[in-house]
Image (cartoon, rainbow, N blue to C red; front, side, top):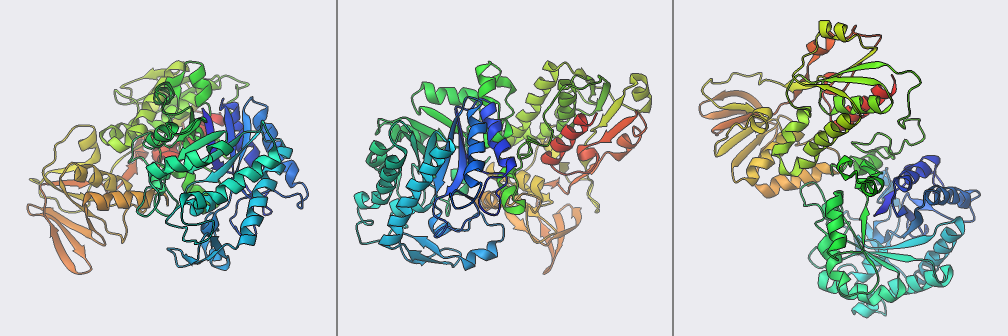
Length: 626
């Protein structure tokens, strides 16, 4: 079980890894990963102007900064590896200020124009030779810094992949045309790297098993590519897709099956003799064990999964696989980098903040803690407080823990979020939390408990439609649908095009229902992050959802939902109306507890309806503050 290359947390202006980056990679080594790969080291900044890591002896202290990162990984028994990269025509991909990309010169195997209109210039023979030497030099410096392995990135549409791909490579010289010519650049790089690092130093090749788009190479050719390069490498790391066409394929979204790309590694493994690694949406220990046991791959690699729970390998080795906090594949981690240049995980508040004193440590003074509400915020707070050694009482008003996460069990693509609630229920039980179900906490009950600290996590409730509604029309909330099993007809109108409404519309459109999605703003899923939103919108379009934007609901009558649009009134016919206009905090239930103890903290949706990331973070910090 290895840690996939994931971009550094903080990168200084000169391309040096900052102190947070050290902690970021160390955490996964500490969690038991066999190898931890640092991503991405730009080998040739002159032709790749991306804001990523750079390593040069010309920058004072830069080699030392990388040495500290390698040390942090190795001291926990993991192999320290680093990814050698060149973005090619996608230079500037990781720039936060996208306008500056226009000032760069994008280089590739051939002249052309990118989909965003930026010109691409073909590399000359002199530049190719210089880049080959740069790969070798970067590998040598990485070895000098203490890294024990290098990964050469030849997938996902980056420069080496651009040379291999018949879609990008239109050269008519020795680097273009036949497969032998198209892999020549890769072979020159790998040979040069081997010359510099010497024998006994593993080289891992990361490649796309198939580009998975029209005009790119398919799996059959992917097998030939792997066979043509295996004599120069020690591991072939099989990923999928290309940056330009398949973000949600390379990084499988929640709308795809876990391990959906494993078949690529399994097929390539039949054609090569070196160990093969597989990656993509893997987080379940049982699935990973089956991949290895069945011979589909020799190594399982995780990226996002080890952000959500860096201790997956250690938990598996200790037979605690049922305690793994699984990745939600929500893309919070990938959406944060281009927005704030930081790293964040929806379910792990410590990611990117490893040195901020957020590790769970025993408390100096044991206290009685009352947590009110058994949703995700309440359970996280109760678990953290109990792990610190406090006496914790968790009260839940209903007969089941999970709160709003219980609704996610009805959505096949959100089942990981439902299971997160099940995992935290188990963790609370094993941590010794006194769980009291069907218990409503008011001021009198809190006084009877006499807690030193109260954490209020009573959550939120659906908002009612603020418009006239015909009493004979079937108007439901998502809770009615997902928790109570309310039935819908063949034609639905979902009022509210936020994340919840979009997911509801997608669920029923996939079941063959006719779904109209009415949103008063000019865009759908505006509350979704920048990585998740385009994927969700594409799913809605593919499912055939009727998207009605700038439509303010006026009334619900026997004919359907009447909406006001810029073109006038329109009737959206239906036999079922779903209200998904949002949630409101249960403030009344929270307010009566504000004086219940010397320490009181209101968290999660009880404070302000937001998202799971906010709920988990507030819960963690509340418990740490006691």
